[in-house]
Length: 407
Ligand SMILES: N[C@@H](CCC(=O)OP(=O)(O)O)C(=O)O
Image (cartoon, rainbow, N blue to C red; front, side, top):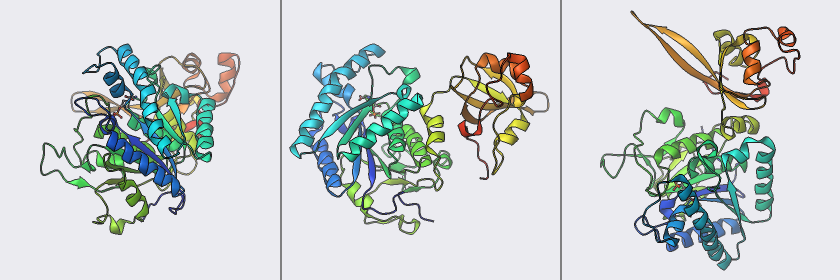
């Protein structure tokens, strides 16, 4: 089996390149790593000249902001960190614009939060803006909008933001540039026996095989854990994801020029990197948006019959009120909720309740309405509520199943 980038040829690829704080600022002094950044800019301009479309997702606002204020450490208070990021973001963009301008490459600033993408219209507006920028030959430079990002609406780290961005632009590749060559079976700085992991077919299966304790830098929030989450999101959207060393950006060109097949996974001619293969059947854009773009605001617990119906191979059903046993959280129609089942596991003396995540979906009714109609047939909804907006609680088009099924 060979899973190559979706466009199937290397004529014109769409690449998202994510650069973490450790590749932008010196970890001791916070001074910008100008030679690194210049090499990256040269590589991106080279990629553009080869006909590729490039999006840069960059951290570094906090690091650059700290340097501007002559502060050694990140402040403790969230609003002060946000202030530092606001100071650094303009300077970060100025630095990129200065470097790209030397090579006549126009760039654009795109600042996003998860909240912006939770609304389908705003999500599509962002998709359209990216599309227009790439069609104009511009390199969008993306960061999280730290001024308005607090935990509820945060991507949390730029690895996740880069995976969401890669899904939005239908990228062929996501490059997660970091301070190590690749993913290892353990932390290579503390364990000399740690082995490089070169090709990953299934990110979720990998979690038991590698120890991903390697922390991010003191300024960044990511580490290997967030890279694996990003790889899982991106590969689910059909994006081949690569972890490679941030200080050697030219490797990107070698990697995309080298056709991949499982037979040459140990190719010695390529620089060390980890390749996460894109899923053969990527999730449709809308379902991927529901799963990763939206924040869950509640939970609907369903019974075994409903689990069977919504996970049925071939013809998955919508979720009806009859299969709902419990509602948690306060939400209104059109918001995203998790779908779970509680199962009782009988031990000799005790019973244990296990909660299993089934999926996520957009509801047609509020939590208060669902509490009143749960367990009833669709034909009873009008009597119970005085109206019946929809016969199902979650339509199958708005429902994403996350447990493994056979289809
Ligand atoms: N928006 C922040 C990003 C912080 C962050 O997640 O950094 P990293 O883990 O290095 O990708 C900044 O620009 O400093």
